[in-house]
Length: 116
Image 1 (cartoon, rainbow, N blue to C red):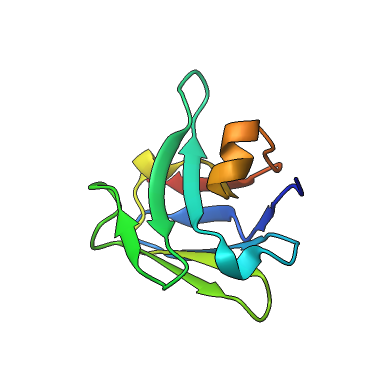
Image 2: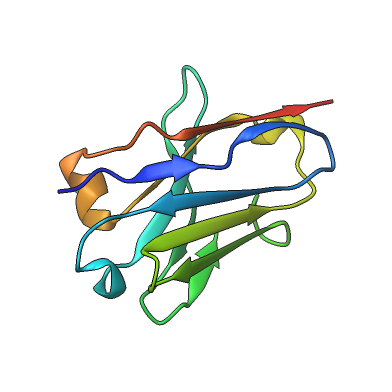
């Protein structure tokens, strides 16, 4: 199982936007659903949203209306567009396939810090 590689995090002011990217190598990218997660110190990793192979997306309540997930199968990349960020969105963000998550194969993640 290949580790995902996340990027695009950084420091942003409240109300700002960021677009995260995640490269998942492998020939089965097109046939794999993908999930975005986030984690803050002392807390469990939580799901942010999901994109299916047919580009159907589902976001958890705190992300709906602010975040968007998309994928580029030609580049093996999944994106997380985050708008109207708040300090509560500060976390390390990860992406993974369901198989990778089940096997515990995680990338380094990308740090998002939102200042008030």
